[in-house]
Length: 271
Image 1 (cartoon, rainbow, N blue to C red):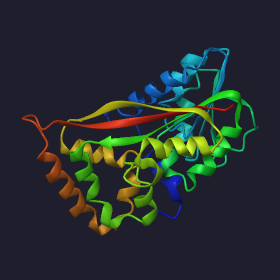
Image 2 (cartoon, one colour):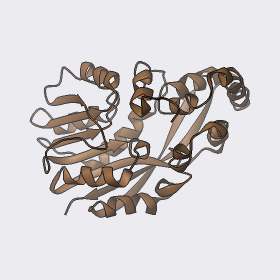
Image 3 (tube, rainbow, N blue to C red):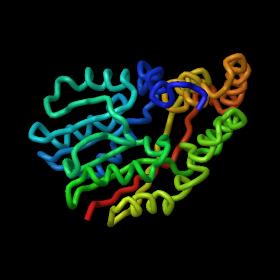
Image 4 (cartoon, rainbow, N blue to C red):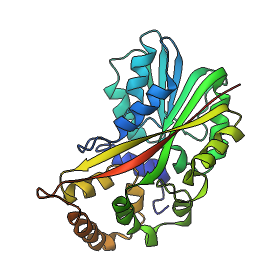
C-alpha cells in the first residue's frame, strides 16, 4: 500500500465524505445483509468495520432497545462519525478496534456482520476464525463481497491497475483473483473458519451518477481511495482526465449514467 499509515489512514481520510456524496451504495448493500442475518429483538450483535453505520442502522432497528449492537472500525475518524450519528440509540456503541483482532470476549455475540471489509484484511482466513470465536453456539455470521460487476466499471477500475501493489491485485474488491473470485472461494473461507450451514445469496445494486465528475468524487470517498493513493500524485491530473473522458462516453443526454454490481452475501452458523 502506498500510504505509510495503511488502510486505517485511507479510511480516516475518506471518513468525512464516506457514504455522503449522493450515491446510494453502502446502505442498500448493508440492508441486504441485515435482512439475511435476521437479527431478533434482544440479540447481541457485532458490526465489524462499521464505517459510517450503513449496517449498524438496520442491525440496531432489528435488535431493538433490549438488544446490544457494537460497531468497530479501525479508522478513528470513521468511528467518531458513527458514534455521533448513533448517539441517540442507547443500544448502539462504537469503538475503534482492529477487524483482524477485535480484542473482544469469546462467545459474546449472537450475530456478527461485516460488509465490504473482509477483502481489505491482510489475512482474511485468520480474521474469520477470530470472528467465529466471538459467536455463541448457534450464532450467525454474514459478510458481503463483490461478484461480477458492470463491464464499464471494470474498464474504469483498470486504469489504476499498473499502479497497484501486488496485495491489492491479489485481493481486489472486484473479486478477480483469490478466494473472492467465486462463491465457492468465499464459502470455503467461512467453512475453514469453523462455520456450518454456509450459503450464498446474491443481489444486484445500482450506483447512479449525475455525471463524470460525480464518479470521480465517489471514487475518492470510499475504499477506492487506496487506488488513487497508490498513484504518484503528479500523475493524478492525467489519470483523472482519463477517467472523466471514459465516463463521459457512458452518459445519457443529461450526462448521467449508472453502473451495476452483483453483491455476494455469504453466511454461516457456529455449530
